[in-house]
Image (cartoon, rainbow, N blue to C red; front, side):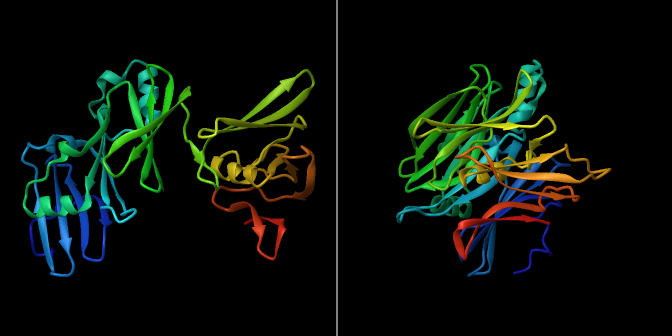
Length: 320
């Protein structure tokens, strides 16, 4: 199969997904011509099918294409092609909303499409896709989306932020019929939501508090499904700070393992000093281990605490 000798491919492509052993979906867009195409590649029969917009059947939704993902089949059901439109991130949209500048943004409309896999393949081959028929949700200027690569049996989860109401909704969709099964409402705009090892969504917060001459590190983990809060207060020195604060998911992983890491003094990447690293237990709120190092810790080079495979009671702190 040779696509290089055709004029079907624009210069820029946005997304490529392999959905099974036979088909690959390619979404491409030509920014100069303000156009897009879907290319469905059949690797078994060495064919490809190109769908160009006809301004009907929901094609208009895709002119602000953001990304495409694939949800594999669950419990012998069909898989889904997930398409999100609106080239804007939740935090960007929130900032524009708060500054009353959202009206100026043409990409402010976001849509969320779940297209059944087999139907999508058939419709692209027949040149008759119906994107608006599989529209699950949309966000206008007062809201935005976030998505999680998480499926619980036949359920899929996503987050909708409602800036005008200052609420965060964790929405649960039944993949059998694409109906909204549950909606968990949280106060405030909370992102990102994290998931623990049991699959619970959690609101995780780390705060530094000053009480007279004492400083505290307050960590709150709120399990959304269980509606339970686990709060840990740790007394820290004036020059002590949370380690890996730039990598929130790593702090969360350490916390659910039962540990909190701090460093003192404040890490200086330009003029490194000797730093004291402390590892606190979330049970005793006291250090269980501490050591000195002169090497500042960079993002993607620290792996935090991991379980020792030779001894489940021990943890390893990896710094590179």
